[in-house]
Image: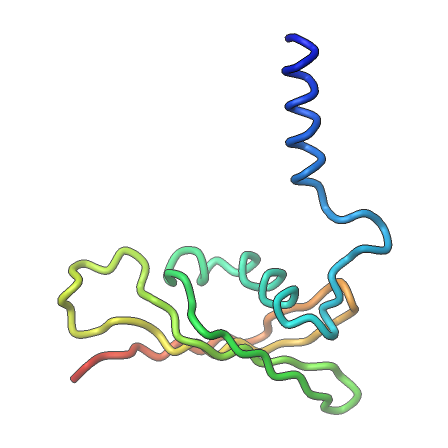
Length: 116
């Protein structure tokens, strides 16, 4: 392996590594960070849903717990035909923000959206 190849591999690894200490995403306040953290961790999102549009995050406190709800509309992954009656899912995912760097989805509701 040449010096140039080693440098390319190191650059790729460093760019894919998690943020350095002190630069973690703030799940308590950053909506985009919260979505990016919880969505890939749940198999439903990868196996059932195509990309989701206009995701909205709602945060609130209940019984001393920091809670969130994410709402949006998602496509159907591997839809059989583009002219099918059902075109997507209405998504509601809710859970807890455990720390500034950890959150957990506790409930997912998917409602099939159809034109008829």
